[in-house]
Amino acid sequence: MSSEGGIPDPHRDAPRGRGARGRGRRPTRGGGRRPGQSDTREQILNAALELFATKGYSGTTMRGIAKQARVDPALIHHFFSNKEGVFQDAVAARVDMAALFDSLGEENLDSVAKGPGAWVARTFLSYWEDATTRPAMVAVYRAGLSDEAVAHVFRERIEDAFATCLRRIVPQHADRAPAFASLVSAQLAGLVMLRYVLQVEPLASLDFDELMDWLTPSLEVHFDRAAQEEGARGTEEG
Amino acid sequence: MSSEGGIPDPHRDAPRGRGARGRGRRPTRGGGRRPGQSDTREQILNAALELFATKGYSGTTMRGIAKQARVDPALIHHFFSNKEGVFQDAVAARVDMAALFDSLGEENLDSVAKGPGAWVARTFLSYWEDATTRPAMVAVYRAGLSDEAVAHVFRERIEDAFATCLRRIVPQHADRAPAFASLVSAQLAGLVMLRYVLQVEPLASLDFDELMDWLTPSLEVHFDRAAQEEGARGTEEG
Image 1 (cartoon, one colour):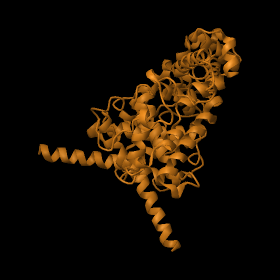
Image 2 (cartoon, chains in turn yellow, green):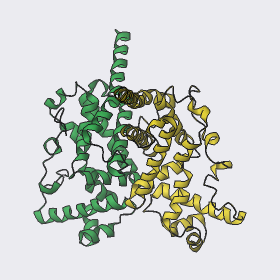
Image 3 (cartoon, chains in turn purple, yellow):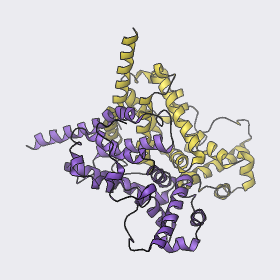
Image 4 (cartoon, chains in turn cyan, green):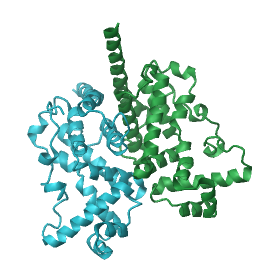
């Protein structure tokens, strides 16, 4: 991988600290629990993540999660009340792109000016290139797309992530989610779907730097045009 | 919608004739069946399509399809043997992008030279803008992504469609699926996912012409660069 520009290191930039083996990535909600409870909860969440990733949302049952986690089903109901609750904590809360974009330091933003498209792509894809965060991302895609029941969760998270990202890099668009941002977001969503979720060739085996070489100019087109329109509007108004 | 360039009419360009209400889009396999059998089969396929689209692949059972179609479950096993067979005929065979690209007349290809990116996007998106073909497309995405069991079917269809598309518009790349084609394919796949499947705003409500205005320059970047590299290679070799 190229060091030029640098893939943001999710372990450094992530909003919350992470323990060994990629555990402990969920929000600090309920931080006062005793270790025993917390371990069981984590065990359930890991089992759920695995099932959501391989069987989708509809194919995953509370009973199946209990079996996979080797705990009593009643315990899962006690912790999460229903399947949507488990999904929220096992998958959605572990892949918080909005928090990622929000947590980035000012020093990171300096490199944005050079190429916002490249920066967004590298930041976003860093989550996918990292083998410890990829399974949760795949699970979000699979479960979030599998049926209407959780599609709204997925939709809201995508809208959130891009609104947050835009606030950081193009603050003049903060009040609304502009068309061009949707298209950037669609481009990245499609890329991860084909490269990491479905593993369509030759995209799946493409070297990361070659991928960025092809991707970046196509993304910058959106930002360049948005900037031009901004400039034209400024001249008209002035 | 703009008449410039023209969205290919799937009803005109589609590889097979279609009856009223979007029925009869599957291959002519088993064309010798008696009408009664064919109606029941079609009834099962329509029920299956609806379930795959709303519940995903894992969430759809043979028993559920039987109930939805109001037929005896044994009949479904008789026609299709297993769930993958039903999925193949109900969903995959009805959304044959490879056949679509393959069926396009030479006259259509004249407009390709002006802008291959715009042409591919319009041809592909025409299937999605059409309310009669959209449900099957959504079902392919949902079911194809929901779990590993059918992901390979989806993956192969995407690879096929783009190989066929490329053979028509950039025959010099016919021997391999080049990197740039993967990226075009990812961009379109992501767009339909966010606009039609998840309905992320503002992309979902974006006027089709405005969508094309934003999308086209970003797609043409890939084709322009591919052409440049082709030219450079030709010069080196010559």
